[in-house]
View (cartoon, rainbow, N blue to C red):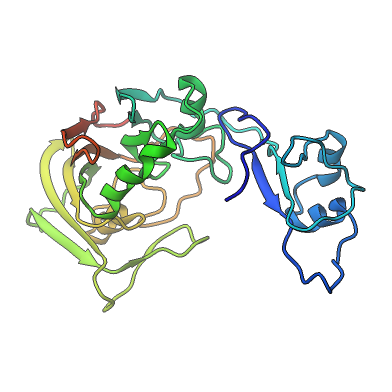
Length: 304
């Protein structure tokens, strides 16, 4: 268990940390100074020397670590990452519910759930930690950056395990809606089940034929909006990109999907064509007090 961070949160983000490794005391360390080790440890795009000059690196006591400090084993180094400029994602995060344990929001499209990659400040977690004054706020499940709708977060770390357990046990009833083309040769309702694999670092998931089923979705056509249909999607599993893969596999890809069936070259600051997929409803029995909970998005198609 690492010690408590000596640095306060900044912009809703806790400080990052790295730790010098354990080594055989009989063997000399390959680094003589903390500067040598941090240049080795951190990625090439991190300007370690500039961070030393600004006294960004501190020890457990909050005291600056200097580049020429002797290398020490088993030492935590704390620092705040330098954030790159990010295009502002339009749209408000509507608060659907808030109590001492939960914050439930209606997420707009294009906003990441958690700080990740090129999307740090422009994420639900960072925005809300700052605006609500909840430094421990964290999601108990995730929505794709392009997906809109109901997202549930816990206010403090002490509540996170209980609510995450609901999703792990599949004890949450999740309902999505999607806007997609209509095929007259498809009879609804229908169930799609196959094996989906999503590899880290690969943008799209793929269906693996003949592999054991790990993804299952009930698809129902419930309404029409112009030439397109409104579909209710009820997933029995939660594979990455599952609904998007299943709809594309039926020949009715979700409107404005930039990945399925084809990868589209869309600029990171192009917010003109939101994915027409809505996380519409979450329902479950509260694991803390046993009450029945139901949260529903207030958004409607077409999503803007």
